Image: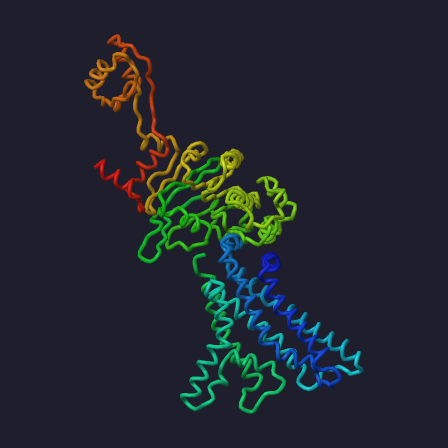
Length: 248
Length: 309
């Protein structure tokens, strides 16, 4: 199992597309944050700018890591390597578990790198201005939620990749469902019924996990996490079933 | 030893492989032939567990592929030369496969050397010609030093030197006791290397056995004669039940052997300038054997077949 996991990780780290997407997911938010910290808040006093940054970029980062999850599956189909993968490891459950663990590892490491650099740059820049940096209030929860969100959405992406097998289709689903389709579906339901169906929108509930404050008309953290996990679990089950049974 | 036993695979209403049974013996190269769409690739995918068979089984030395521990050390396969990420180097392509079995990196370098790709080990697969990708595919098949090799059209896109090299590799693998199953449309090449043939059409077995048996059964044979007294000889041969076909410098006799023709000529003092037994090519034998199973036929061959009826 470990050898299959090692192989999957190696595959993911030897393709340019993965590196580019990871670059966008990790480096871009750090650069924007550092520039913002240097220029926008010059002389001001920030409560916890690192966490504000995390909360604002978390949905984008999580979606990009979802795209990385998609690529973990679809690159194999588009490049034909899935046949070699399954010939080398005929036990498909092992390959599936290795892909899930690979996706999770990349998501957690990328999130950790982003957090560490964000925190470090906060400490360095704020200390240079004699401002003390510390995590306060809900900051700890936001940080943990950030890991949770990126992990769940990366597996969501992997599952869609295994279902669609086609990169463009799966990436479109990962990006368009939360940003457009979900809003339209639950927005229309809310408009038609007069009730707030939008609070049951699964990915929006996921994004809500990394908000510093939860509003009265929003679900609690636990309910939001359950809605997100329940939604993603459907795709995980479908992806796993198709991957282990479908002809390669 | 590969044993394919009553393998059946259906896609929707179409039976791609229909109750197919054959064996591939160790120490022999077995050619796997069939017209386009006859089910060769489907059979190979079912053998390797990539496609799930509806019925039947395939075993490698008594074990199903999915039950093999470290399968690449038992069975090496090349199904499609394009099965490699274009953005990865040849070496990295082999490295990730080697990692699944814990092979050392030195083994990767060994097979790259074996297929003549050491100098392009760090070149990305996307920059390779089809022939280079075939060599890389062969490197994948040889990576685990397996005792069974399955190759689907390994000579596709190779230059003459590459084709000869592939043939030599297959021969040496079989000579070292390995079972080699190879599908190819290059029948001339296959005739030079195959010991046995498995011929299928529309998913069904047409013939399985030694190449010589297949040729005896399906290849035409005739006697070529060049003689200044050909007409006289032709009359005598026809009287003995033979058929005659005139050519520019002599003629061909069918339904008689060279010995019979020679004895007739000798008994009648007929001078012969040439007397030789002729046998059709593997290609002609293959076309004869699979004629009724061709699913996709071009216009000119369809017209030819229609004209001949």
